[in-house]
Image (cartoon, rainbow, N blue to C red):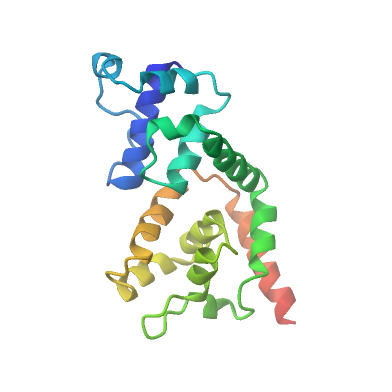
Length: 193
């Protein structure tokens, strides 16, 4: 990817995570001109990103971590650390999920119940950094709990931004649904016995 294509990708990913724009639907294309890009003061950041071995992954991982990330922060050492941690989790996604399932309550349904406007166990585990965004997103996607939480935790300033991310992240999070379902099913069946 050249620097303009990376700039375009950065804008598309950022727009995906912060608005109703759909990255997959528009193939990561946004309406931006080369002239606009050439007038930017941070153009050098995209030049530097063009030399990265995975600029798209770096952009996605850092915007997942902080949707307000600026282009200049993507060339920092911290951005590389965020990317490396994200890459480890996503490359070994099944292992990540299996390990993190150990933190959940043994009663599967209890992990998703909102009682008296108190955050459910799964969300608390995510906020406590016991469960990754990947595990939270997958469990929300498979169970549909996110939609229920949207109703029950309406106007909850903690849940609302997380809700948006869990709905938008599956565009970039690729996994074998059958294997993940099997791992979850096995975990709860084995521990119930």
